Image 1 (cartoon, rainbow, N blue to C red):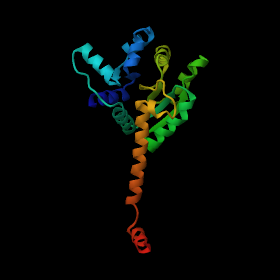
Image 2 (cartoon, helix red, strand yellow; image 1 turned 180 degrees about the horizontal axis):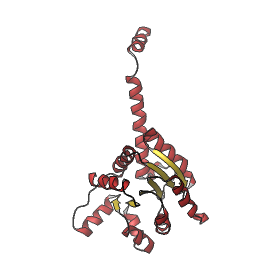
Image 3 (cartoon, rainbow, N blue to C red; image 1 turned 120 degrees about the vertical axis):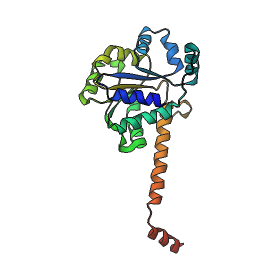
Image 4 (cartoon, one colour; image 1 turned 180 degrees about the vertical axis):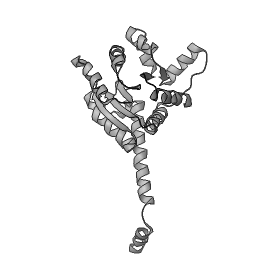
Length: 223
């Protein structure tokens, strides 16, 4: 995991745009029949296998072991690193129904630690994706956090990536996920939900610790 984080830190301080993609085995399978996806994967600065099946296939193909890391843990460390470096994040979502939810969940999981410079949807149906690029460039974020489906995300980046003014393009898959469907939650959703729950528990414990001795003594006398 440390190797991944060192790469992220380097990218955050580069002048150009670097790309990191969390990729699952089903995405790699789609790429075999999609030249745009193949080209996009070839141009990645860092490919992070996001499931055991892909890790197994990569290990067999390369002849050397590939590190297995939990997507949730690595995302948490990446976001903490982005926060420590005082870098801003732009959330680019697949559609409108995820936009508000993801922004809220990210805020509740990290409160004010993370600077969200903007939130937008990639409206592929409108065909006017240059507006998405312009919205990103107006706020000049350090990181574009793209939670998009494939192959649309690869096709978008091949066409518009060179125009984007940012340091890091970080892609997380959110394929075929229904809101509220716990059985089909993505690692990203589980990650944010777990962070939110841990934050709530921590706040509750801090509130109890902060209770004054006088209040505790008064409560005991009343009992």
